[in-house]
Length: 57
Image 1 (tube, rainbow, N blue to C red):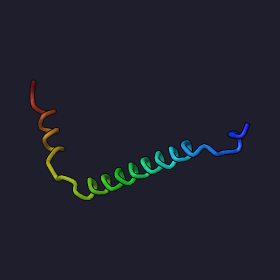
Image 2 (image 1 turned 180 degrees about the horizontal axis):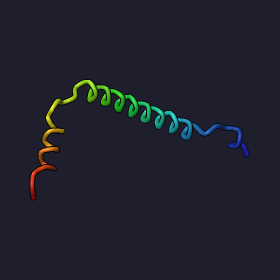
Image 3 (image 1 turned 45 degrees about the horizontal axis):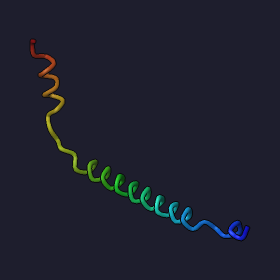
């Protein structure tokens, strides 16, 4: 058949699009993690939790 020798461009294009989406997702997750790590909110969660656990009832 004459179609056996031709590559399938749709399959190759889908791989590139999927790769680009995965790459963008990894970059966004990395930037978000760095942003969250650098801008931590300093609250008294440990003290509040300890007080709640020690209160009766």
